[in-house]
Amino acid sequence: MIPKIIKLIASIFLLGYGVYQITETFIGNGIFLIILSILLVVLYFKNEVLIFAFLSLRKQNFERTEKILKLIKNPKSALIRKQQGFYYYLHGLIQSQKNLTIAEKHFRESLKLGLSMNHDIAMAKLSLAGIMMQKRRKREAQALLTEAKGYDKHNMLTAQIKLMQEQMKRI
Image (cartoon, rainbow, N blue to C red; front, side, top):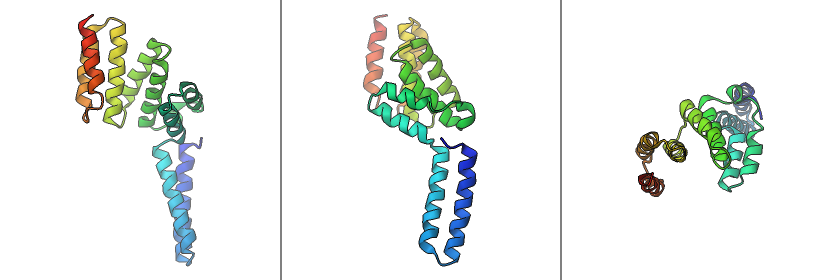
């Protein structure tokens, strides 16, 4: 994992050298270097380790996802704020299979730090609501379900929310 300040410095250097190459009539080299500098800027905002962890999680490979996330030693200094939120969100999803107390802590931390996508916020709140239901904290679970419904703009989690509401009636 490349530190974020090095990514920015390398990006600025590559951009400058790319422009220099274009002015010296090495247009192909210049375009390639500019594209490379843009890639480094994108990787500044979208951490490469988090991308690999997310792809691994999509395949339901929780062990590999956890190993990938452990590559980030200190998320506070290695990641920007939204990436830290996503880091804790992924940890919460992994821990929800093992330990609900730790999962709750990670989901709350991810919501506090912020997630960039509304459906991620909705999923984190829905997961928290499920944890609260299992801990018999019905009022808090209901509030989280209502918030999750508000963030679910594309109705991707409607079925899960309705299922949880039905289960909550039994408590």
